[in-house]
Image 1: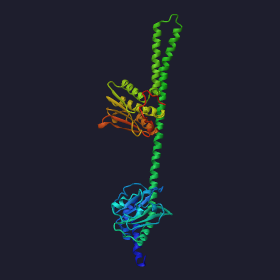
Image 2: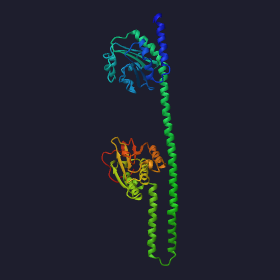
Image 3: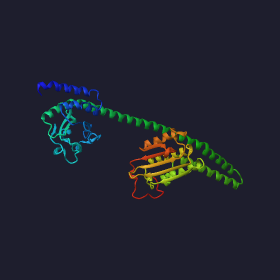
Image 4: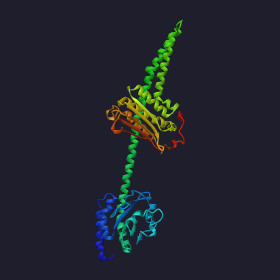
Length: 420
């Protein structure tokens, strides 16, 4: 560079530095300096490629022409037309006509923008910081053969000027992404911790309820039966009618005890399978709830849900159980429908819907029941969606358990298959 041209060129570099100041993202930065760079290296299209932290993907930020390069958030380096440059194998690429240059047209190379926009003459320089290639500066013109060695030198000066700024932007972006990932992880961990705590409290309350039921109902009834038996043993002549009454009382106690056990552990599911347990609970909830509630049940899973691990099956059953109980007790619904299905991808789908008043009207909206459902879903990696039904009426509870493709059998499972 001659002495006469050095001062204007330095002023241009200073202007580029001033234009970069305050730019907080790659796209804004490259567009802010594009016109000034054109005074040094004329171009019809200008872009920078920034490598990801692992060096395997890159993202393009463009100015001048919007191409398919800029429309790809992350692209594999191995398919970039300038892959050797990004991998540090060459220190620059100068092409007279990139539309025919074999260096750009290898198998799998994404050269569509070169051909679509006729980006013939091209210069590519690496962006290097601390000896590491962090990306590239890429200048293109429509006219073939319009770049020479002097343009390469000028482009190299620009690349050296841009490199530290883009390095800082990349570090800032990576730090921001890491902070977001960490914050999301902390939020998930805290949500699970709080949910597990609420679930533990609910389980403890359930244990206390069972203990009270056993003490206040079953134990008291058994105590009365024991006293009646004691009186019978001391009676010279036993009245057959009293024996019949004693037997009836004993059977009622056994039924009450069986009910308590059934609520504590879904034995129907263990004996007859998941779908049978859901249908049994739906029928019983409708029978014991408000009069006139109609229920429908459809199992499109062909019994394959019975192959779920016990912990998953119980968690899913409790979610459905809570959803049905809410619909019966709080929604004022006239119809409750339960659908079990398995998608082609192996995702378990459970759908509970009603035509009631919806969440806003129910006293349990946002209560511990819904929170317990959300916690159970999170603990087994399922997605839980709770919202209004079709047309905004009623409530729909949908549970999706992904990555369950191992459940899909070649043929439907036989009815009554037991949970393993």
